[in-house]
Image (tube, rainbow, N blue to C red):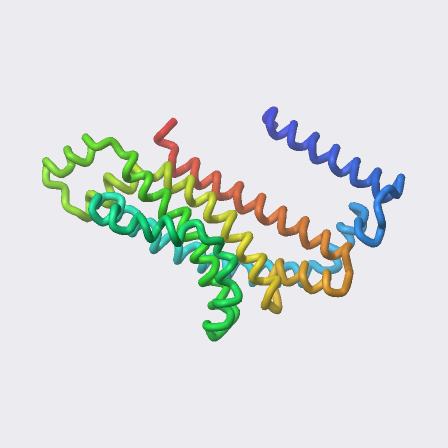
Length: 247
């Protein structure tokens, strides 16, 4: 076990101890709002089938939204980043649309798209697209000009230029943008599910908050945090593999 792992384990134990101390033992916190650790474990077991269904629903939306964003953002970012004239032409559009919080599209998407699933995928797509797109362009711009010029001199085809020169060169920026996209996509997923879903992790929290069942709300929040932590850990493993050449 590494030192970092041990430190994280100790921190988790301290947090659990303080949680147990303030809720079950000293009762410093309102029991109707703050469940004990044992209550959370009990609810996790009791609602395990609901959580399983919610996870499947949430991951389905997250997968399609992020996959579509990657399929559009990365190729477009490579092409636009490579073409200076095109990059300068599209820069005002990026500066206007990129900073708009994607969450504002949720009510509009629900109104114009036929199903909640399509609405959620669209909003997740928008949220994941911009960080990935902007970082891909930045990655191409950061690539050493001599490498691109040398590839042109020896007659590298456009396809090879994009896949074998620009894509690997921009990969560190793409990975960085992907990390932001994934976190933002999960935030949007949860927000969308809290508005109009009938399943999902966001729906679980919203549904039980409407009934003032705060122990289940806290349990749902903990599950969401655990899912985000797991997703980011997996993503970092993949990123480390893709960027292993940097070591």
